[in-house]
Amino acid sequence: MSVRLILYILLFCTWCCPAGLPAQSVAELERQLQQTTDSVQRWELNYRLSRSLFTIDLARAGSYAEKALQLALSLQDKKREAESAWAFADVAERQAVWPRALAYYQKSYDAAIVSPLPDLALQATDKMQVLQARQNNFREAYEWSRRRSSLLQEKARQVAEEQRRKYEESQSALTAQKKRENQTILLVAALLGLLLAIFYYYRQRTNRRIRGEMAEKNAMIEEKRRRSEQLLLNILPPAVAAELTVRNKVAARRYERSTVMFIDFVGFTRIAEILPPEVLLAELDYCFSRFDDLIGRNRIEKIKTVGDAYICASGLTDRNERPTDMIRVALSIQDFLQKHREKRIAEGLPAFEARIGIHFGPVVAGVVGTKKFAYDIWGDTVNTAARLEEACEPGRINVSGAAREVVQEEFQWEYRGKISAKNKAEMEMYYCLGIV
Image (cartoon, rainbow, N blue to C red):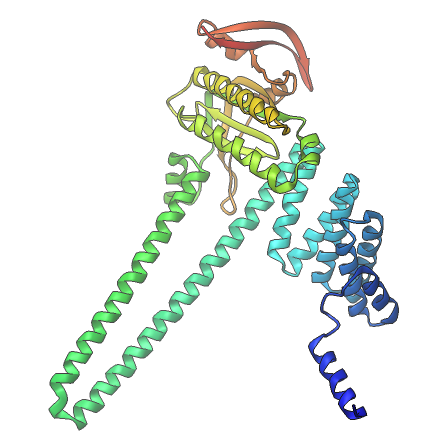
């Protein structure tokens, strides 16, 4: 074999297998890292090594992720900075170093917003929300939940804008096409009068096709509008959604006879460490979907979820101003969770238990701002319901004295006495045992 042929083969292999393609092993990646001095290639190799070692050696994976982050900072490349910070935070989370994981997920989020990498920014908000909730920083978890909603709304807005742009381009193309056809009609009419009848038939057929396309596109637009309205109704109560549609804002309202319920899973952090994220999310979605179904049958409004916490309220309209339906739903939820828990334990799987707190009193409800909005409730009643949930035992329903006084003859009760709660004076608490 000639020297020239060998050189051609080497050049062909170099062209087909650029340095950016995946290496065969960790050792091969480390060898390439030692041989290269190019900053971009060193970042690529450090980043791939951190990902390759993630399931093998967390300490080494973290070291390579940190080096990749330093290289990205020196390159002033926000995209690489976001990916490197995510990898480092991912290692810290697996090592259960929550403050470091939170700090670097924050860095990844900040860089992804600038890059922009909207999908990575969404993933970072998910991580921040879960980690803050895991450390009982529910206020921060709620803020990250709102950021996530904002990002999703922005993404939906961009998709809608792109669809509008494509629609306008298609309309422009159709208009241009029609103009060309009209010019052709004039030319053919001037030159070929004998073919007028045939040309007239062709023109009518073309117009029918264009009208059909227009009608189809209008139907698609109407369907998308209907879906948008349905999405709004899934976010807001019907009356609030109607007011927002008409006035583009919602006035805050005070409801004097509202019932607020907090549901929180016990040992969620422990179970989250056992189950894969996909399985954990599917289990959480299954339980929350069942909660949605139960409250939907009883005119109760779902307010929000924060991590593994579920918050809902009744009495936000002129109907359903007594705690009866809320307590009945709470009993149904505990019954569902108990049966589901028994089934999963029989299958050798971890299962959730929940604490439930219910309080009755005034709240203020509304939508804050005019963009990226979320329906929410405020007031001491909300805070008290949260404290009742915290003071509850797993698998039980802790009801305040104020709520019990309104419906005391309808249910069986176990008096707990006056119990102090965080930032609250001692208050009477009752366990609901069932329906009379």
